[in-house]
Length: 143
Image (cartoon, rainbow, N blue to C red):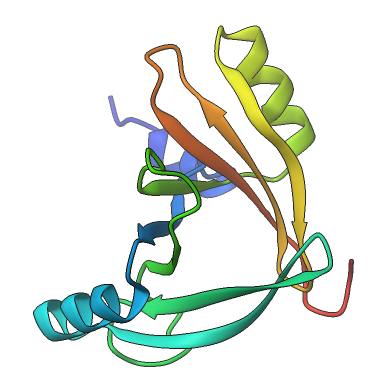
């Protein structure tokens, strides 16, 4: 008997990691380290969080700007001494998944927040106190 799991996955994909974030005490030092070690292209980006500009550097792990075929990430100035690396999981609705996080025993520690022109994120803790973020993409031009 042949499995039809491929058909199910093609209809609706499971949420997956779509972005990672590296906090840095010294952003220039971190940029040099990762670009030299892995050949990553790291460029300053115009990013607004809740309407306010923030210093943020986008990472292309393929080494090519705007390459959507590989996992991308970002580097930002560390906001808290205990700020961890953060993986962003792409979902179709932050509101729905935030509710599910709470129902399953996790916590939403930073509610839905807009990144103008890109989408929304929420930071969560799982049942084992590991941080992760939910990411809901929006088409550019919408907000």
